[in-house]
Image (cartoon, rainbow, N blue to C red; front, side, top):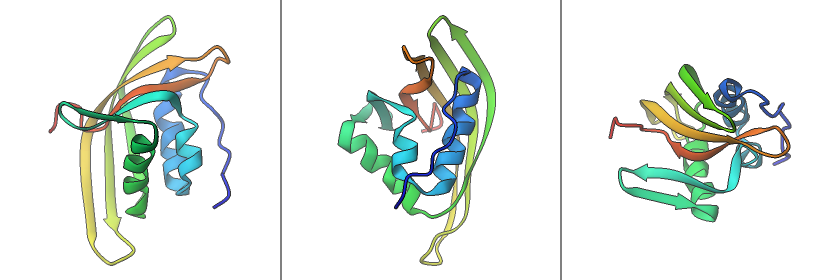
Length: 130
């Protein structure tokens, strides 16, 4: 798959919407550009993955073939760090005909890099829901 280039976020509050666009393109490389190299992904409470395992976790979501909708509730920014709290909904029908309904309130930590781009440092999609 060819990487679909979407604008990279220069404001913390734009990061979830950049993620939504990349996710909905179905392009894992576009999604991965929005994460720091050592970023953590919380798969279940108390369990995090990074690197190739993080990419695999994101690939599982992408494999659903269903778009995501994100709504940012709050963006708390302190210098180059941000706490992002937002609701997500993945709802539709997977390629195999299985209905998909996954929703939650994500709590994510983002960091502005030296290039001025905001990226996820910790992605906790389920927040406190699970």
